[in-house]
Image 1: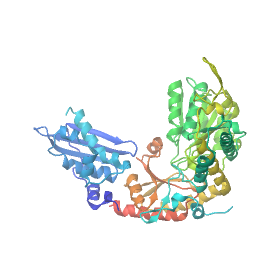
Image 2: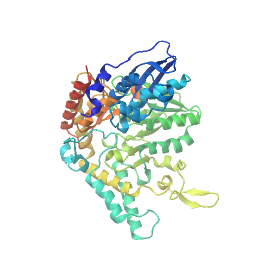
Image 3: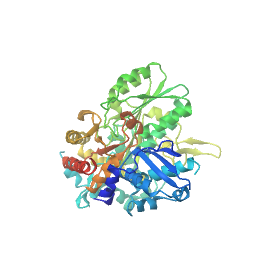
Image 4: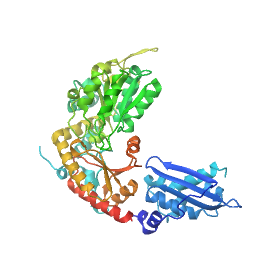
Length: 125
Length: 408
């Protein structure tokens, strides 16, 4: 079995971290991936130093999109919006344990990150 | 001629390979079919022995290439029982054929306030060109809905025809998701009685069952060669009097009769619609694919797939939490789509891939249809001449692995 479906990622898929909604969050965004129907609702809060203090998400999708979202909600804590805006596919692949994603799964893997980036931008961050 | 899927499989070199040490199981023929050796040989033979540009050369090579290209057109015409070869136009694929009709016939014949009828099960290629035409001309786009069991709700058609505004009905001959084979005889009869032109999307039907455009009494039909074992090419068939009256779609070489600095006159059918150098070798190999299918017999192809789909529907319906889309086997073509409760189709397809099984996951270019059934996407297994019940057994075993891994 490819490492996409290894136990650690399946844990994040079945029991995602930070699943839910932050009420009255500064960052509040819905994103979807129309080709496969994945959806995400992501909310985030920044602290007094303008760093990410908390991220929550809810949504529907494949193992890649949901497990990545779960991992990302931890990874971005303490990072500045500038740092987040510079992240891309290589950072996500590293987050997933250094795997190379096939072309068909790139959009799934980037769903949560692009939601966060767009949400921060829309919030003026 | 009697044959089995496993015998036919032997003639497809790509299917002889192993994936992760397992037999390659190709269940994505609705997207594109694999190619038999005779088609690969035909392509190679054109380039090795007979290639030149057609319809112009005086030399032997050009004459032979032209002869083979036109012979392929005759094979296509015979395959669908067109009244003449001039009614067959080579295009890139079914999509281009449907666009040609929407653009050329549509812009000349559909005006403000007219109605364009499509169905809820159309592939985007037989929906989006008509959406565009409706917007461009100020026409109204109306839909024949799909019932919960995946059949067309034909009771909705007469009211759409009653006010005399309908000009064209564009419909798939077989749904690429549900596998639904609509009752075309009835639909075309109703449409023609109301003076409505019928455009058929034959992309899924022509490779899988006998098609006779004259018996159907259709007006246009587009289909793809690559879905019936040929290379990347397609054909548009249209009734002669309609094609004669239509303006060209693309302009350039070969489609003109005479050219002056200010104006030109158009070539006769079918060349009026074949501007520029066409896909010559592909057309010739398209003919070889048709020969291959004709030898199997299209009625046998249909019966073979009907047996496969009957078996698949029975086996799949026993998988826990699996919801099948589409009608009963007698109205069901080679595409079988399903939704596995709580598991995303991308994960289904990725895990099946580890087992050497190729299926498609997503919306299969039919987003409105998935919206209709309230599911984000589906998994599709689509069958063809080289498949067998063994493939379904492997699919079902693979699905049990998916469930074991992902369902809690």
